[in-house]
Every structure is written in structure tokens, then in C-alpha cells.
Length: 400
Image 1 (spheres, rainbow, N blue to C red):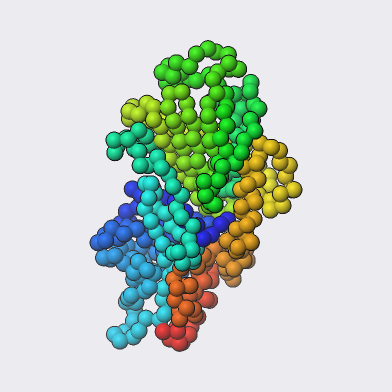
Image 2 (image 1 turned 135 degrees about the horizontal axis):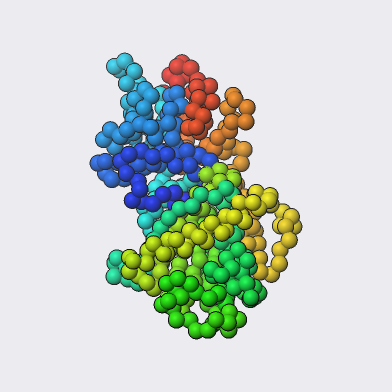
């Protein structure tokens, strides 16, 4: 799993003043919108005192209040109040949690999962269709949804870019089993963070409202006019599919959120320039979900579950070049230290209970607080390591 990237973690209209827990890269986050400023905040979902989940707490002004002992944290993660303290008693420097940078864009909340300074962070990918939405007088109608996979996000990422699987996994829907050949293609690199392949594919016979209104001639699949299709990846975890149908364009973005190494929550956006009335939304959602179910029936059973690092560990052919490009790019990022490694995990006193701990930018930006950070266990097992790593009251006093 890759750190030091922006992750689209939730639809922006779902983030409210009620704190909610999200899981990204194996780490629990508490995400909420501050009632005064309307700012979206993403903190590590673990109070450093006794390991309670902050997502179970409430908001007081723009601060989140721990449900266990009432500790209050500001949007930057610093504890500002300990109710049990006697008057005049200071708050230890260790009383703080990681706060991650947040942006709202394309209808999503994006969280930067890493500690790079702002000028060194990869950009949020460009989704140009969002400048051309129907509700703003443009061409594209949008529907959204989500899907839970029992698979590694990189396997899903490669599946979404894979052109050769369509005639078999999606036969009759958008794959043509009578013409499974993949034309040769060149990989396009719009920037250093993405890659796309564009080919002409022969579609199957359309069905439903597409068949009634598309007016594609003839029933011989081998004689159907080709459809130009682009598929590609956008780091760290996104897929873009662009199909140029005779009746208009269809574009699907998937953000494949790694819950852990073998579970992935996909939040998707499907855009279309045809049938743009809201009457067609239900059909668009159902068609997209059927594609996910067809893919999951295969990808959830792929072994090994994780992508091999050795390119020679799996057989590649010419049509796999875009997946090979991803694996090579991932190797480059691994050499930069951007893959989660043993330094990003903590193992508690209970065997086999480990947790992801991704340092936030504040750890790097405030070197004088180097000793102030406490590595925390995930909220699911809040007492595994929190008390042990918190240290004694005397230690806390030393680190004021």
C-alpha cells in the first residue's frame, strides 16, 4: 500500500458535523465537518489517553471531544483541554493526535496520507469532466456508488485497466466474445502519476434502453463498428475508463480505498453525455454495479492475493503492458520509501495485533516535538498499546 498520496476517501456530502470513522491503508481516521468554519478535518481515530475512538465523541465548537474522559482536540490534533486536570496544570506535549491535510474536490473529500511537506506532495489527479456537468449547464450527468471487494486494491486496479478480460468476464455486457483480440497499443503518460491505453474494441449487441435508443445496426457482432475505449490508472489507487459510444461518452472513475491488504472499498463516479435525464440514473447505477459484481466474482479469488514484486513471477504478454507499467512505477516508489513498511506498523502486547501508523506532516514540520508523538494502536483494539506507550504521568510531565 502506498503512502504520501492524496486519497479520495468519502463523498463530500456524506461528511457532516457528526464524527465518522473511515479506514484507509489499515489506519482508522475520524472525519467530520467543523460546525463553525465548515472545515473538513481528518484525525487519527485514537485518543492518546486511554485509546478511546474519537469517532464516538461529539463536537464542541470546532473541537472534537473524546467520549471516554472528555479530552478536547482542535482540528490540528492538539489537545486543548483535559477536564480531570486541576486548575493551573499544563497539558503534556504528548497529548496530540495526527491531523492529515484535507481538500474537497470533484465531490470527494481527499486526505493526504503521509508526512511530505506541501511542495513535495503529488497533486490530486485532474478529472476534467467535472468542469462540464449538466447541473452547471454542461454535458455530463453524474451518478455515484460504492462497492466492497474482498481483494487487494492493486489487483482491482490492474483489473480495471485490463482490456483483455472484457470478452470473458463481461461477455454480452460490453465484451464481445466473438472478437477477443486486443489491438496493439502505446501507453500514454499524461504525467508521471498516470498511464492510459486507448484501443478500438468491438462491442456486443446492446440491451435495455441502450438497445432501444442506440439504433446500432445489425445483429452480427463481428460487423459492429468499433468503439474507442481508454482505460488507465491514476496513482495511488484510481482507475479511469472512457468509452466513446456512438450515442455519447461514458466515463467512470473508481477510487479503490485500501481498507487493508485484502479488503478494498471502491467509491465510484459514472458520467455520461447521453440519456442525461434523471430518469436514466437508476439504469446507469444498475449497469455499473453489475460490472463490479462480474469483476469481483473473478478478482476476489485471484491468487496470490498481493501483486508480486518480481515481474517474472507472473507471465505477461503484449496486451498486459499497461499493468506492467504500473508494476514498474510501483517499484520506483518503493525504492523512494513510499510503500508502507515495518516503520509504519505497531505491534501491541497481544500477539498478531498490529496497526498502521502513518505520520502526519506535523511530525516533520515540528522537530521540537519529536518526542511528543505516541505511536498508537488502531481504534479496533484501543488498549493494546496505548497505555504502554503513553508512559507514566511523570514521563508525560517531562515532555510538556
